[in-house]
Image 1 (spheres, rainbow, N blue to C red):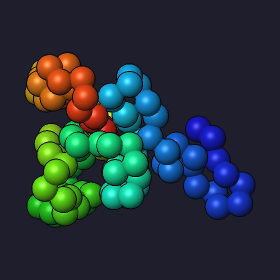
Image 2 (image 1 turned 90 degrees about the horizontal axis):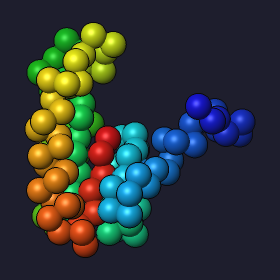
Image 3 (image 1 turned 180 degrees about the vertical axis):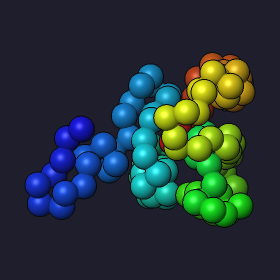
Length: 109
């Protein structure tokens, strides 16, 4: 991981990685930056987070404008989580929203 010595924050947490021309990957911070989302023309978000510790409140919940569609797949941030249990649902969301319409842009976090 790359760190900015002035802020001790990961540079990856500040900028989404462009995986494909219409698919991005980021931490929660860019996913909540409405100016950045607008600049990147993101109109779909796949949120792969779980609940806050000892709570039934979702982590990183955010009120997005109506032009951004959000799918939340609840996953704990733990080593024991089997990504394969959620893979079909995630791939289906990505496929339905960017493969079938390449002008759409999707951010996964």
